[in-house]
Image 1 (cartoon, rainbow, N blue to C red):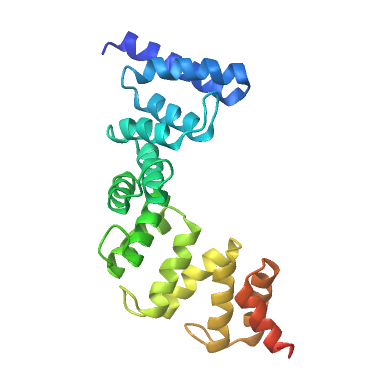
Image 2 (cartoon, rainbow, N blue to C red; image 1 turned 90 degrees about the horizontal axis):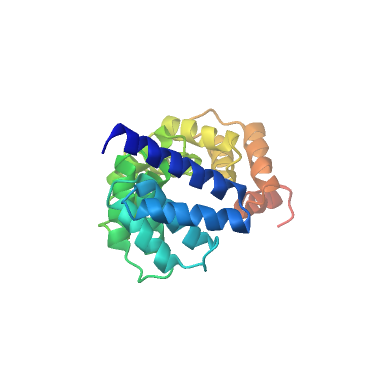
Length: 237
């Protein structure tokens, strides 16, 4: 492809994206036509955007089945967001037959390209043995990748593995540091767990005040376990 052709494709892609961002009916219509033209030339971002428009029902009827076709075309060209979306559709069985094995495959492909949520989801699949053989060490590895990308849920889940010694050696201090990051980001379950660890002195010195502090934070977010613990402490149960 010549530099001139490449520049023309980029310009058309930007025009399509600008129309899509405007979000009006005529804008979506124009965006779809431009993305369709580019997708027919195997441009992966355009294929991904067509998948997204079908998934969201923008200009076209909502159809996860059609979305999956477009996501797959982009995924096979290595487009990580398409790989992730295809994996989610396959895992949930939205418009297609559910297939955990294929979902794990595509989460893995996206994770290789640094997609943090794909790494987190693959960690979940290894932990629960969905689509892959259960392997806590692999779960920890993918959670760590997601943690490195800043995924808050992965901080919590990896913290649990270190707390319980699943796939990794028990390390309360490491667990505390992971829970702390998630708790500071208002992750209720991490706040509850942090409160529990302060109450028991796991990885930190026992501190009832800090325990109650974090339990109240979690309770304010509606965490049922924190609410139950605080009710017991208050003598209401």
